[in-house]
Image 1 (tube, rainbow over the protein chains, first blue to last red):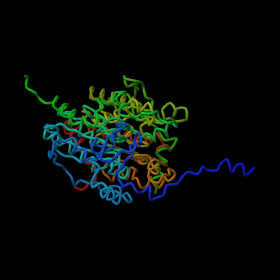
Image 2: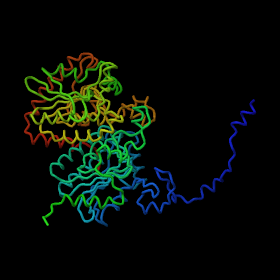
Image 3: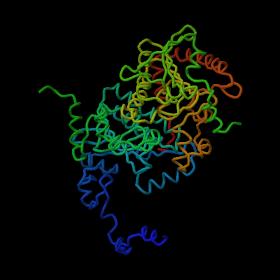
Length: 286
Length: 265
């Protein structure tokens, strides 16, 4: 009897690859698409600006790559580049975490702000980077966004924010929660001034950022298939104890439900942004 | 000396007075108003017009249930977008008629369900935040139990933020915090003390303006006494804020939030 079972459950023998053979591919040559899982040649991805050539999935873009893609050559002037969060609740290991993040990404915080031109149109621009502590919002992100809003009021330039965030930064507890109120209050003043505010929701935009400045744009754009929501998918699944339907919380889903104005492919973003800004300029009658 | 987790447990105590309990005790009269005029009425948030010492005020708050049946009806005090939209409708109504606004905060957080996401939980909360910051009437929020995350803050962008002695206010629940940090939600007690979520902590940070003492073992020990303490503070607090000129009040409120944050330049 025992013998029969052993035979039944005996693993089929496959030819094994030697470890060296697997390791022989130079690192960073091939990148796996986060959506269709196909292997993409890294050089191709650079050309498509991190958009998967086979399925069109928009992979996260670093803030500096985004700025290069969206703004006119050498027009970007960075603001408040040294602002960094302190450790307001004395959270253990927080400083070490931010330092590691800085070493890994070269960023001092999860958002870069500045003044730039988009197809010759002046804007105040804020670009989040999800690689820095998941793009979470703490005191520094809140302050930099607020200052960008104020700069937009001062110069009377439109404000464009690219969102990418896992939400509030829990290491700053109540201070990070209050950044939602701080940024929203600043945007309230911006609104009263009659100035244009456009948000672009990129993968992923969730939590406290969704529930504050991300959803407050006069016009809300999104990149294809970006995950956008208040609660993260895992939290929802735990709450309702079921699997989420395919495409739930995707940019396309939000557009269908009426929370996103337009889905724009990465390659078209610069043109669409500059057109929208142009529409809001005071124009003399032809 | 109570630990942070003691406060968490008191804030969640099953006999802790809820918004409607306080409304009944604090105000001379109250008429509840329902619905967001878009989708439905959310029982997790209650609101209406009340009378306080002869003056009309708008009162809004999260509403938890007393027993399982009521908790299911109230969704354990976890609002959906329509709850926030009702709250905002009542706030704008108060602004139109020049009524001051008092909010009671007591929620584990905004609901994380399918429908809530579909109907724009993020947008509903964000809109509350931006609109509350600009309301042209005096506003006071009081955290009476759990102040959980954005779902609590959505009723909390006010001229003054008060907390009951044993109430808590934080970016997420201690259980959520522990499960992210250590993948173990049972270490909530450790998380609670790390999170600095007590009224005392928040007063020290300058985020909370006033702590209201609780009688005996806590608010549940003597609800009417707690309500009486809140009432007397409200009478004083409201008349103080109502005396401030409107533009000054708005500027003060904006500056209050503008200045929250700890960073190096």
